[in-house]
Each structure stands twice: as structure tokens, then as C-alpha cells.
Length: 245
Ligand code: 13P
Image (cartoon, rainbow, N blue to C red; front, side):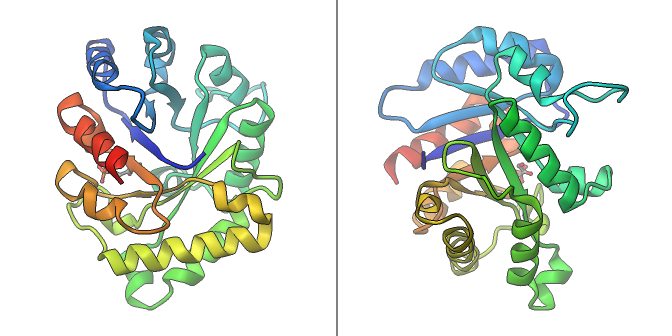
């Protein structure tokens, strides 16, 4: 598995938004890469019911398989909706809910146990980048959050610089290249040759207008897209750019 265009709807969308999933589906053909949309949990079942080429994912799961965890959802419950992916450790979860790398690893393990593909997110703050700490931070987040048994079949890694999320700021292609090369090398060291097949996504202010450039970077296999994944009008050009890459 390599090329993947993933949309993270975050806390956006109601049933009316399912028309966008249908519209995206209608634009896809056999030459397009894998596409996944991660809507809010309220839309998982109806989004899965749409069928077609688009895979559906959740945005978080609990590390336990069941129990007294009010308001949470387990990986088993996500799998039961028909969804096949789950985003784990998004920086908004790390910030809003105090999620640590240990918790994220446990969640990724729960996702794997339930047969879901975990999209594990990592990324530095602006202060960390300016302090020259980016690769150290990415290395720590990777070793802390990615289970030892991760494979190209059950894990995708998304590099999302926190300062690029929702800001319109995008790292230079050299900065993206440096981060993705580093990630690939680390994964090859820890997981062996199969790491060559793990999809490495870039996320943070990806749009139709910058997608071709971003996808030209060697170890960028796709994107994790926030705002521009909410409509077919904005997301389809990103998918088509990935097809061309
Ligand atoms: P934006 O594409 O809105 O910057 O969001 C990126 C993101 O956080 C995807 O998970």
C-alpha cells in the first residue's frame, strides 16, 4: 500500500454532508489511488453504506475494547460500522485531550487488534522547528507511538507539522523531503524492508493548488487533508494530483 488520499473531516459535517462523499465517489475511476474519508463518528454508518471506492475511517478510538468510558468509542465498534481506518494521535487529540505517545501506541494496538488500519499522526510545533528539534521530535513520536508490529498492511504514518494545520502555511518542499526521508529511514531501521511499503502522508494546508508540488517529493505517498476534504470541489483535485504523481 502506498498512494493514499485521506480526508479528516474533524468535527464538521452532518447527514447533509454525505452528498459530498457521493460526489467524490462519482468522480473516481480505476486509475485513482486509494481514498479514505474520516467523517465524525455520527456519520460512519451512513458513509459506509454509500459504498463505492471510498474507504471510511474514524478520527480516534479508545485503547480498551469495551467498558466504562463514557463518550468514547472502541476500535471494535468502529470496525462494526464497516469502517476500515482510524486516525490515531492527531495533534488536536494530543492538545485537546492530553494524549501522550504511550496512549497513542495503545490506541494503535487496539486498532490493529480490531483489524483497522491506523493512520498515526506525528508533527512538530513551530517552536520545535525553530529550535532545530524537528527530527528529534519526529523520532521520539515515532518510537513512542508506532507499535513494534506495525506493517504496511495495518499502518499509515501522517506527518503533520502543527504550524501548517489550518493556517495556509506549508513547509518548503525541502523541509517536507527531509521529514519524509527521515521517517522512511527510521521505519526501515525499526520494521525492516516492509517499511518501504508503508504509506507516508503529508498533512497541513494541502490544497488543489499545492498538491502537485507536494506529491512530487520522493517519500510523500499521499496526503491527510482537513479543510479541503470537506467538499468534492476541493478534494477531487487533490486526489487527481495524486493519481498523476
Ligand atoms: P488542514 O488541511 O485543514 O490544514 O488540516 C490538516 C489536518 O489536520 C488533517 O488531519
